[in-house]
Image (cartoon, rainbow, N blue to C red; front, side, top):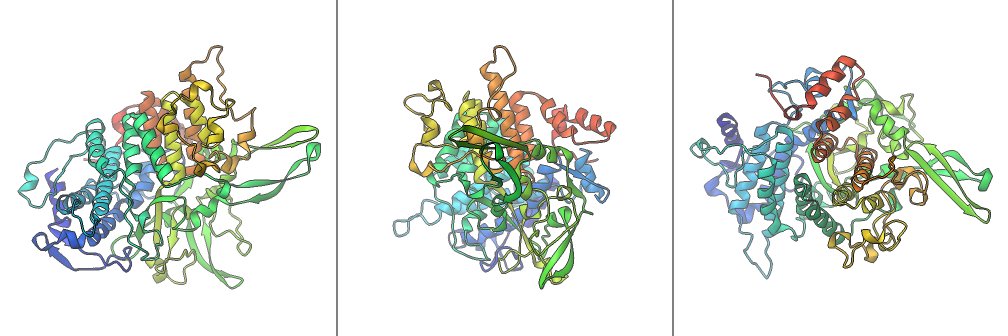
Length: 590
């Protein structure tokens, strides 16, 4: 561990890197100052950008380690030995480039600690506390880095002050685990819970600069959720949703066209595809936090080349790229089955009564699998299920525009990827998870099916009287008009599920089902909805970990991950490994 800490010191605030504001994704400054020369009050913005530059080092591993160890992603014959190590849960090589190294996390944490310990968040200038937001941003980044470190490695060494000398690194505390570390992080975040997000104007093509920083309430909610403090988590998520007017509207709904009425009603082949538009802009109103990764200088984002290979070409005057499926990472059949087995529901009511149509297939598959460049001017013979919709990792050029065609290799090298660890539906699904565990499966089901709004709260066919106490708990208060347009997340790809009284309902196949039966049933729906809405965004493996922990059932994770392996020997090997919780975490080969 001393070797790790010493490595941190080489890159930490013993030398502070200053980053230019003109384009924070390109970090090419070689200007450095010693700690005793550094004025944190005046340089807090530069220091934050330096921390963001360090975050780039773990951005790709956030997605790869979060997805390749889950059940939705597999490797093919083009995968290198490092991807195979992750996929097979082997002991990892110490130089595996896809595994976020402890030293990278501690560098981020050490930089955050330096900033937190040296910035005067109480300082008042013209009735404002100008450094309070910067302190909140640094504390949130530190907490997120610690959370990822523990979830990947199982433990972490906690530091509340920066390590700035070799002598200071000689007294290293013992590592601690989630149950001890997360309450400490919560206490550090609580003073900043109501601080407005850090914004620095428009720069580098980012119109919403707050997306570059982690939201304090989001991280707080996640920490509470991992600890099983579900009421605290639900309250924090709800307050965040309320304060920022986060809603799930029908703006991003994919619909299948229906013609005719009554007995003549039928589906057509036409689909209105709005959901994938979420990922076509790095300033999407659905985004809460993004990790921006430069492809210039020492940082290289590999996500696009791991999922889709590009070949230059032209088509009707457009510079386009052909997609090749000869890539190392592919969707699993398990993933495809989640979408294919989802029931799409449509109904129609006229003077003869109500009729309905159903068809299997969640339409969000259109924005999850396939080539982002599909348009009327682009054709491909590839099976859309063969590769992942690359705009899940938004590719932008230096001017800040989305650019899916490369005119030359130099242009490709300048590109950047934007990874999205938090979107509005992420928060709603974790809210649903929390309230479900609080014993309110009907309320959690409403998140998926009806949408949280006053109309849902007062409808006793949706929520029983016992589900809605008086006075209403804060975490249930969605009566405000800002939520009137809220819809269920499941409607985004599965039709008019809010009208479905037959299929998408809580059904327990037992003579006398218990409340816990309903909770587990709804939790399975939440887990499946996370696949349909959030797949390949970096959440999957840790989501399965959390559900397995709450159920105190290692086989929940082991069985789901093992199911993706077609080779029976490998399937049983992985299942056996994951039934031992110590194997959930990164282990390096000796």
